[in-house]
Length: 453
Image (cartoon, rainbow, N blue to C red; front, side):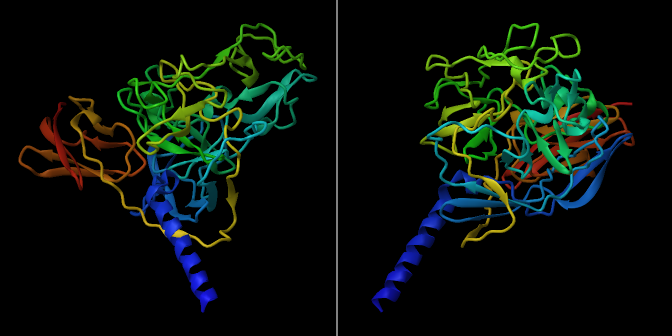
């Protein structure tokens, strides 16, 4: 009887510990679980009308033990993907993935582990994170690029920066697929939202991305790296103790002052790459950058992993955090999110199945109160379409309706969880004033718009 009671007590304590974990651990609580059957959508080249897919978007379920969280996802976002204008034949497709991530991340006590090609993290909508590379590097013997989609094998000495080299192939949300595995190398917000727009893909194939940068607020939790540490957006508290006001987190990597590519910034002589010219500008290769050590006097400059210690809403006691870095124009800044090495011990992986006892986390979304200054309606006046966009990150579905002044609903749409924008086609309605109503379970906000012909 004693042994049985002891075992029951141990099991009871174990499940109490696991349940307690679920109530407090941000790596369990913050995934965008799809409870309303949102499906993916995509564009094809030449057609600016999005096609609705059958594959479920965002995260399908979250399971956890005392040490691990398991994220089941198809790897498809709620925002529209594609097209990929560099002749990439792939579409974003179902991954049937289970990501296993540590609930107890720790700093690597030894030599830091380099990031690799392929998945190095996961965003809260289940989409994969890649590092700077795309598998292409310079081959000195042929004086050409090799590897990845180009075929062959490069020297692996001067490695192409995917964000620069593959820009033409990114969709409006700054993502693209590799053999169907849709992913982001960089800050997952739309090109059109940058202060200086460097891609025209959104002009015809409009989309929105995971969140909208807001320079007045701490950026949201966007995901987790493969060492288990969290990833935040571009803006945070200046100081590591959560004080100092909101500021842009800055990469401590800068371009080297070189005209030839024969050494690394450490001074090491290496197999030569192409000279710096109009084709292979500085920044085309990862090795064009050098790291400049940050100090306590510059807390808004990140370390060599693109992170630092932070205190946030999710981590009031503090933790190590990575950031999706952008420059002053909000264009993505190397090393973009994580890398070129992990701060922590890399333990996460995609697994085929779950082989331990787990519990399922049932999401209880804390509905966000709508704020007038967090909603943009544009253009206003309008003659063909009206866009309604939520700043920040949308954790739940938001209903948006267009009414005439008699209270008659003209059109209705939903900003899905994990996306930020909807559109109303106004080409077929009369000139005049109309009301936009934005609502969720916490309340509603109305805005007046004018349509003219």
